[in-house]
Length: 288
Image (cartoon, rainbow, N blue to C red; front, top):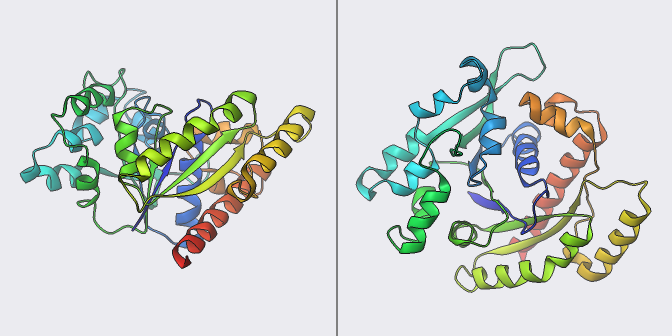
């Protein structure tokens, strides 16, 4: 089982969109069994992959009260953690086309709650981690109970707090989406510092590199900054990038990953190529 975190210390970097689509490509194109874990307190991945549940409940998030979530997994006593984790794992059900019935596609999720769903959120749990009431290796303990998966993908927010520290310290690999704008470029040194600190604790952690997202090929500034990033990052910058495209938003809104929603569109092809490059880079790391 390979655990891959998607982390950027800047907002708007399409971390959730990446996990949503890359998990789907792994399942559809590679026949992989995939678990995604939502550790972003906004719960966007949960809302996208479980949108059919919300629709079944008339737009209400009440369904989440009937399952365990990542918060419960973190807070559970060790003697009952396995049962809580197994209860938390939910099948991602979605139609392959609008109008069809939702079906299972070999992708599971451990959901999280945002403040609109519950009073107990990851933000509360993070405070508990900070005080030492929860062990900082609790995510490793959760991962030990999930069962057999080929890949676990972790959707993170942009903070450098205890929760994200724990996620990287529990991962095999981290991938960093970078929006082609000056703020993201300026955030690269602080990411590198954060990564180095986490690797000093988890020496198995490997950074697969940065990939550019929401690229507008007609934007002269984007072209210039992309060239600057290539010079700055060298081989740490993926060859693959994702374009700015409305289809990505439509697929999120409908809860259907691009490789099913509109597989022939350019951004769907971008995510297929990006997944292939991620797997190639993992293979290179393992050979070395």
